[in-house]
Length: 290
Image (cartoon, rainbow, N blue to C red; front, side, top):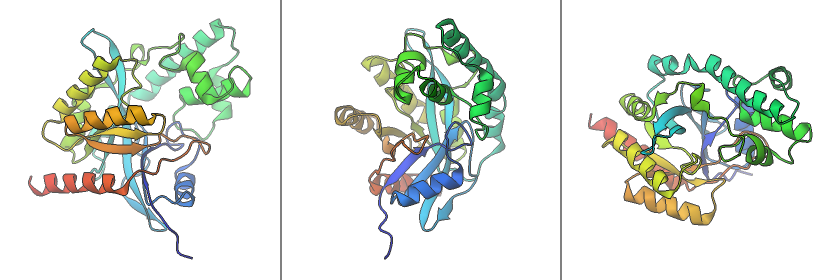
């Protein structure tokens, strides 16, 4: 019986960053879920350098860039931008990523120190021991240990109570990691033939007006080049998606579908395939006129 494939998911992580599944396992998972196209978008890392097919399923190479962004009130935020549809992976991106690992270690140490102060027994050595296959330890790994040791009921609970962006014990990554400014990142993606996509716009400790300003600044950085925004995001309800779709139309941004999947229990999204085709056509048109 022929496989019936439908649906896209343009934001997925592997063990190349803080996911728990290898690239090959992610492909298998997505294939078994019946998806037709996925994008591998590890944090500050390219798991793939060129597009590939897996038993007829399209695998798009990309990355999720961490950037710094300052609000009108002067708050410095870590904002994520997914980059897709590159013509290969230029050296300039590896230069952006190169300094992050050491700074990330300092950031994780700060989180662990705060957790220890709260009476939570956890160490960096535990992260290394529990996740030997990960190329980029992160907060999700910490939350998994919180669950394993009984401090949290679930990954989301660990984030909500202890380490997430809206937790009372949140540690600001921008104090430890010097990320590329959002505008510079967007421009570099565009200059290298890619499409920048603003990831999960409601994840940044912003009120509604600040979210709107972030979207506006993102669009201005892209100028006339095709750019997108995650609208059909796995953790956003229909009402929030409806608002983001309105913003995307208002700012001429292409809506994207994204699960931000890290582990087997995280569901894929099955976005409308037409979203991807529209994005590809926009990129092809731009490249053909340059």
